[in-house]
Image (cartoon, rainbow, N blue to C red; front, side, top):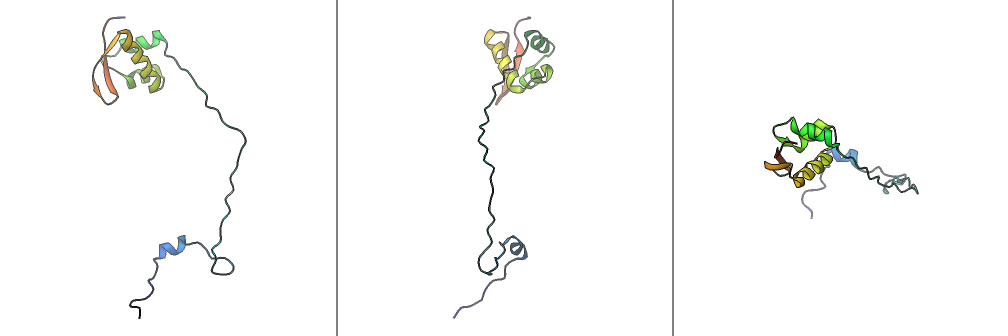
Length: 112
């Protein structure tokens, strides 16, 4: 002897339940169509370089140099500005004076 009975489903689940087919007990399956194109897209490698005159002008005009500030001043992506500032750091033109977690603050070492 079973105690209780069948539970009533909430109204929200009835709408999301699959619709029954013409026989009533088999759910209707939707066929998925996928477009398979034979073309394989190749990634283009774009190289953007910061011009020395434009980059140095942006660096000289700021007191605290940040990657985001250089990117905004020069008008390039942050990754390009990061590569430019790191190259200046290896040359000894700027040095890291603070910051954390990828948000470094640089200072101009020598007047360029």
